[in-house]
Image 1 (tube, one colour):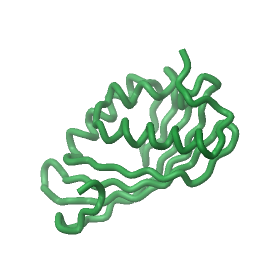
Image 2: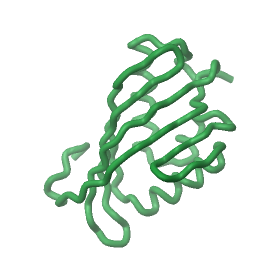
Image 3: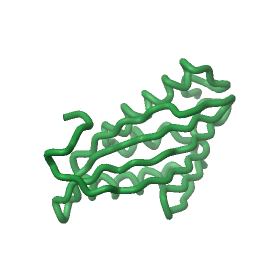
Length: 138
């Protein structure tokens, strides 16, 4: 099975991949999001390293149990044959403390020939914000 659009990416197809990722992540559906990654996909998410769809799905379930009211915006930064880089921002409320955050970061993606992401490298910073300062999707 293939996951369109396929590499090599054009500007338009890279934008389509980014929008599809934004839509999936905003669903907060760990299974849906994990399906975009190859079965043996490798991830670095801040200081966590793991491999495979099952690990991705487990990570995302835990993430969205802690990060409530999650709303994300992704923006294409650069692309090449089978790679895409994005900058992102998302806002969320901490489940235990109620504190709101805006998270800023970047991701570097590498895709296999069937259009599945085989590598994701993510860096981010969390900035505490007031509820009234939210600006993504409100």
